[in-house]
Length: 122
Image (tube, one colour):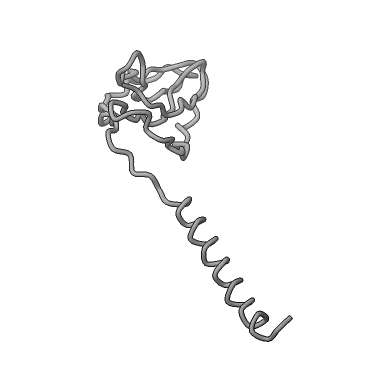
């Protein structure tokens, strides 16, 4: 291999690495969601005294039939685990300018906290 071609190899490798790094960096950018159907602020509830063997399920918002719905706090027989931390979601590409993002959330169902994934709605 001639000397000039051998000297060009490190430069070409560096260029290829830089181009690959730039492509990965572009893929890692966070998408900003415009138009979110934000969850309202929590409603403050007075927790009534519990009977022995009962635990309080705190009130929380749940997305139902196209709107945020307040699920009132209530006592149940047994133990209530604390609401888990929200799941980190990857927001997909907005289907159209008329769509808004409803973020995922936990709701109390069947005696446990259930994660409801985020969704695009019109």
